[in-house]
Structures are given as structure tokens and as C-alpha cells.
Amino acid sequence: MRGDMLTIGAFAKACRLSPKALRLYDELDLLRPARVDPDTGYRYYAVAQLERARLVAWLRRLGMPLAEIRRTVALDPAAAAREIRAYWARVEAETAVRRDLAAFLVDHLTTDSRGSGEDTTMLELRYSAHSDTGRVRPANQDTAYAGTRLLAVADGFGPAGAPASSAAVEALRRLDTDEVPAGGVLNLLEDAVRGAEQAVRDVAGGADDIGTTLTALLWTGSRLALVHIGDSRAYLLRDGELFRITHDHTVVQSMIDEGRLTVEEATSHPQRALLLKALTGDGTNATPDLRLHDAHRGDRYLLCSDGLYGVVPEDRIRGLLAAPAAPDETVAALVGAANEAGGPDNVSCVVADVVQTVDRAGV
Image 1 (spheres, rainbow, N blue to C red):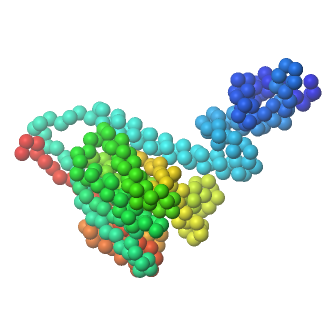
Image 2 (cartoon, rainbow, N blue to C red; image 1 turned 90 degrees about the vertical axis):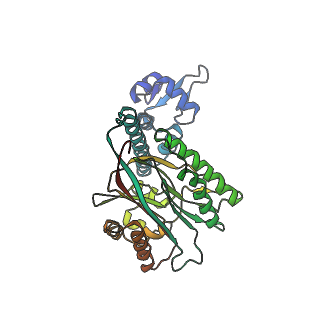
């Protein structure tokens, strides 16, 4: 055997992969041996393959799926680094969702029920919604809705964008009247989104150029369940600080996540409106984000289409939300700010405040 060749056992030991894994990666065309003995079928690997094999081993330890590993190891180092960064950003986002769910379940299972004679602190929403055509577009393809339990914004696109956004929100509206069980709220919301997806398909007739974004919050009495797909946004104003609680499903956001684009560069990028996910007529990219948020008295939530945040700076949005005004006045101020900035797109806003009421049990 040549000096630059290693047996499968020696190669496995050097790269920290088992012989069984190496045989699997050979079958998957992920890590082919340099030579296979024609008589015995025994595999031999070149010393030069160790670097690729170690990278495969590290990526497996990271939890990356084999299909993504195959694509990543075929890239040059700089491109591979971007792929790994993007993968880990997705992992962190998914972990945050699971962390929120775990915290919710722990709290849900360990909270003692209150005695019948105690004062019970209740939270409720005070809300307002408005959708405006803006100053440039000939028609409004947005839909905004606010009710006792449901808050929603949808931004339609394509020839039937307005019916698509309306159908998506309408499919969720039954949640505004149904009693919402706190323990099953995410499942309930996920089922409702499947109904919204079907409603959009019915409107679009299978066309992939018709669809809508959808960002909605469902109130349980103490928490808000978020469903999000597309580039409409949800913000939380808490203690004077503004937090964006959704992640845009766009090409430019993915480029930001991968480190290929700065936030400042994204604002003028020609593909800033290109969506990676939405509820579409063919239903090919409709996997939404689902999360739970604990509500605090004094919280203020904003749901909006890109017609607002695309032209009104975030500092200005924060200032308008922080002003001591009722939700309807704040919605009017936000829409007005978008139109003052030129109103190039439809603009929709929902503002909801978490307020406290005290109900003496038994009274």
C-alpha cells in the first residue's frame, strides 16, 4: 500500500469517524474512498482526504443534516463558513421557539389554581386596526384585523393579492370567538393556519404568483401565541424598549443572517421584497414560525405590513408607540407617518395594549 493511503480503520481513527459512518458516507457519495480493492472490496483513503473527513465529523457533531453537509463540504472555505453561519442561525431560532414552549409548559403545569375568595388579576387587550392604500398603489392588497383574542395583518401579492390576504385572515377569525385553551394554543393556531393556507389556494386556483404574508397574535388571557410567515412584522414595546419579535422570511434577511449583507445595505437592496416563505397558491413554502410570548401589563404590540417599516425608521416607530395615546390614535399616527414618507405601498397597522383589570372572584 502506498504511503499516502490509509486503511479504513486507520482513516476512521484519524478523522474521528467510525468505519460504519465511512461506509455510509461512501454510499451517499459524501466521502468516497480514494481506492477500493477490486478483489476484497476493502476501502482505502488518501491522507489528503482527512481535512474533508474531519469537517464532515465536526458538522455531524453540530447536528447538520447529511444533505446540507454534502452541499457545504463541496464549497470553498469562505462559502462553507457562510453556510454554517446560516445553519446555526436557524438552529438558534428553532431553539428559542422550543425554549419558549418549554417555559410555557413548566409554568402551565406548576401554577397553582387560585382560591375562590381571592382577588384575581386579569389581563385583557385594548386594540385598534387600520389598513390604508397609501399614496401610490391603485388598490389595497393588505388586510388588518383586531378583535378580543385575535390580531392579524396580511399583505397580499399577485393578481388576486387582496382576496388572498382577506381569505387568510378570515380563516383565523373563528379563533376570535372560540374559547382558547392555554395548553393547546399553538396546536390550535397551527391548525387555523392550515385552513388559511387552503383558503389562499382556493383563491389562487393553484397559481404560484398569488399569495400573502400572515402575521397574527392569539390571546389566551395571559399569553400571546404568534404565527408568522412572510415579511409582515410584529413588534413589542416593553418598558420603553422596542423589540422585533418576528424574523423576515426574505432573501435579504437570509443574506444578513449569513453575514453577506448589512442591515443598512438591505434597505436599498433590489431584492428586499423577495419572499422565501408565504402562503401561496401552490402551497410550496408555507411553513410558519410559531411562538409563545408571556404578556406583561403595560406591553404594547404592533403588527404591521412592510408599507410601514419600509419607509418609517424604527426610531420613529418606537417614538410613536411610546407616546401616551390610545391604540386608535397610535394606529392613525403610524399610518400617517408612512403616508408622509411618500406612502409608496399599502400600509396596515394593528396596535394592542395589555391592560389589567381586577375581578373579585364570586362578585
